[in-house]
Image (tube, rainbow over all chains, first blue to last red; front, side, top):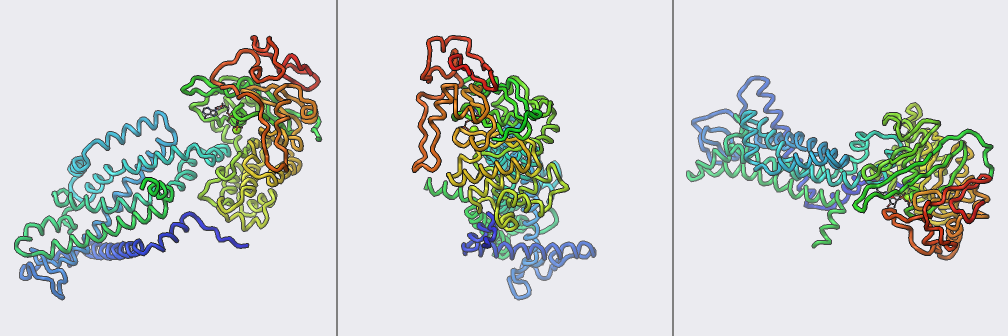
Length: 298
Length: 326
Ligand SMILES: Nc1ncnc2c1ncn2[C@@H]1O[C@H](COP(=O)(O)OP(=O)(O)OP(=O)(O)O)[C@@H](O)[C@H]1O
Ligand SMILES: [Mg+2]
């Protein structure tokens, strides 16, 4: 009798595998990730060898070139290749998505866990804290942070990271309130496990799917916010992010130079779409309770 | 039953009081409970739902959720050391190592996301790290009668049957050689044949490992094989206390008699509980005099008068009713 131990994760993965749309989205995400990684390589190579990277090479004789074989997405107002810039934009989009998650998710998980597990005054304080954060208009708060720490990638990521943890934190808190009274937690306490170990070794793996769902659903939000911030001029400086490209290109759209805007917008559109669709599929696969709850209300 | 000769006392509970503070006011879940457990001895704590058995059990290692629970008095002396006042650090050393628990619902007592072998290993890691090996895990699983132990160690809880889950819980509880195993309704969630197997397992292990057991149940029918002594609880206090053999054959307190009549028959077509007339008193409301008098078939006019009868002891038996003195 050999029953292969099937974990929750494996079941979820099997369900996800059967969802063709989700698999296509995952393929798209993987492709973008690969592009981002390549772009990272290009960026660091030229930075470390102190050369001008190809996507920054200015060529005044070849401004506003239409898409062609040499420049599949044409060139911009300084004669730089648009496709190469879109690729670098992918790198920045992923950096923003990952860095903001690295800031927001730990805050959300730690505060949510403490509030839900300990309850009482700890809970009161943390709920108060995130209610305050939540009542500040997001974009203004991000702008303020970006201005304080300076324009650029760090400011953008800090700004987005520090303003987007509240939703996940609420969710985690709610889950911990449920789990702290579960019998397995009592059993762990009865064995002499410390509170911190119970919170992060015993309960956290039970709510980890929420973190992963949240990661894939917040990624596109972070990318879009970066675009808005760059558009507003407090975003990434000196590197071609999608937001900067869109912001630059809009001025020249009426001249008929559509390719710069189209390139950046399309690149952004597909990754955001893929992440949103995949995140939804992931939630369906990982959170069966949620799905049945939705089915009941529908 | 083989009662171990009056050896030393392992655990002595003195006038334990635990209350819950709820919207309805103070609920005295445990209201002056005293008992002792000697080494190698099994004490059964019996009573209807809500009489405070679980709270008593949890209080032994200060596990009562607080809030809303609060310890209102008494002592829990484990080898002479008071659990209710010791440091948290010391408490963690005792939990799982000196006193361990198995609970009613084995399915929910195991962490759903970890393999059972891993969970047993963690229990070992806490108190006997030098023994936290796969071999020891397999040995423990074999000890509790799980076939194909090496294989089963890799299973997740939901892949095991209820009986096997409870065996895993027992393996976890025994991992660090506790002196006292608290089994809180260990078989209530299981079906009848499995119940018997688990009780037999507990009896074997008790002899093999020389440990004490506090067996909690609402079913007096299962205590006979396992318990050396029985304490009957009603509304937060002990109403009768004595050696299992005599208490089961010659119950004194009217409540114990009623409980014995309500034993579900093992193997009966449908396991039905002959219930005791009347309802368990709401612990938030106070009854004057004997707590059982509203339901008592032998009730006398004086029963509702204060003070409440005290637990009178004679010949190793104790009962809280002046009309049925031992
Ligand atoms: N967390 C809690 N909050 C409030 N009241 C509680 C809590 N836990 C227990 N109580 C109260 O304490 C009393 C005793 O509960 P306890 O769980 O010890 O009963 P029990 O004898 O174990 O019953 P059962 O056979 O149903 O397990 C009950 O009246 C219950 O309402
Ligand atoms: Mg109980």
